[in-house]
Length: 315
Image (tube, rainbow, N blue to C red; front, side):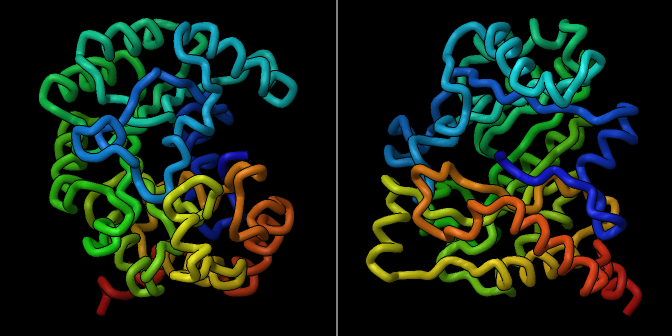
């Protein structure tokens, strides 16, 4: 389970609710691997990736580099039992930086998928600094064929933290990327991480507000995981920082949700790393416990998305 894509009452605008409103039914994501790398790994900007990265985000994908049609069929089989025969699917290019390739290669990868009747929409995860003019032209063309989501990995608006995690681009690059994508009518989703070393609740709420004010259509909240084999794990084992408790995570998450626009779609409220690599926080591996606790807290605290945002605008 890569995240909790759930509609919890009326507390926030979930991806599940948004997809049903837009497409008329639940939509299932098919995680695909386009065989990309990342400028933060191939030597262009760096070689180690972000500090929390376990062989890049591709570690969580199917791991098949090659025939994307085969990947789609295998991914459909994995969700067949719950999806049914009339299911709708999003082709989700999740691993690494999926616009980091020559435009000719990107065209050959994405365009055939846009012609498939069994694919309702396409979602492409990438970096804000990998959206050159030729790539933007291709994405605009693609968006005219199928609904298109572009996911940007911001993680934090704190420039000091961004330097620590080796993000290798400034906030202005992200702002320009959102602006350019939105000008083409492309739906933007932004990733942020809760619990990054050195950040307090104000830093995290500021990031949520920064993303909301950027014009991003959606947001994905991710709990920081410490995974074996990462540079982050070395700092953790050296005692340089602590991970969040479930109670702390819920409190911070609620503050962030209250601070973003009410119409902003929340595509993920947490996530879990691969158990065989997970060092901390271990509570995140118990998905049922996490879900039940967050549900209970949202009810008890009467969470309303955007309530602080609305209040500040009225003052």
